[in-house]
Length: 414
Image (cartoon, rainbow, N blue to C red; front, side):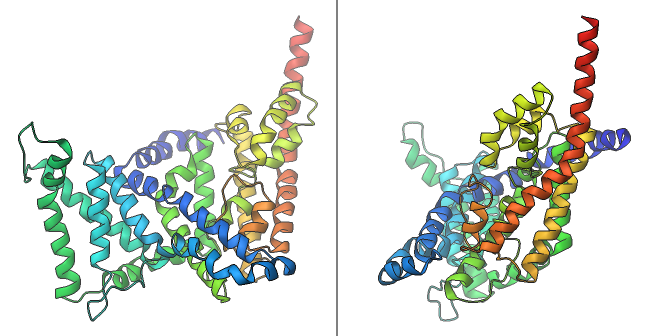
């Protein structure tokens, strides 16, 4: 175990720590995170219009068209937000004008959204266009960076207002990048979104498969064990894909069609990371009744945060980070819950995530809401907490026994 921990700390952790600061990954991650409040806003109205109660359904039936507007203007056009937001944040990472980066990326994405008759098409405004929006943002911002760093831009004297100067400094790079995208789509007739969808399809398939999501979560947990926020590092890859899944699931849910994806946003927080990474809510509850005072105190202090999916107090306070004993259940429980949840959803025994709800929603409640009111999913979320408790119990008892022995020795010595 010590040699494994040394390997993780010396060889693996530095690689992922470097990835966490990569400007591309940081820009994509921050750009995707910026869209979350708006998608949650749209999802809240879906919950209102689709709440699983027959009496409520009769009340809202005349207003469903109105209640669907927030969803259409948020989740329904999420690719537009992604194009601007990722362009904005990438420009910040590369020390360029963020606003120009966002605007150029947005316009670049829109130039690709025309049909064969050159009329605007909304086909890729939603989840299908997310990957195209990401690539367009990277392309446009890199062109902007290239031209600015080589001083291939229009410069004005110092007396010119900064807003005017910045807008004209982006003129040449924006003309170049937007012209390229225009020519590719409208002159050569290349349908970029379709090509991008095919290019990303292996990665999309992987993270919606059992081996893919299992490896994703195990790697995330191992990173946590050496002090690196696993989800934060992997989010740059995972978030665009999981967002694509949940938006597609939402569209299918509203249309009354089969739900296509299993691992959409909601799979991890409400069924795997129950109370935070490693399903530590169960651990915190056990600690509240510990015979050892410090564990009992830490458990009671961590419980309110754990209920709302925040577990840093116990992760760093117990600690679990760099703790070979607690590392075992911390990784193991994720593997167990991923396995159980994936196959229960695969065989449609429990509902799949169809609505994005705030990540701080307590487990069970979050599972119920995110699956559109699926009671079996809520029950499984509760069972998951129990399973996590059974896994953690023998290990926390080892820690408790060691601390009680140390306390006894100190008491005798005094």
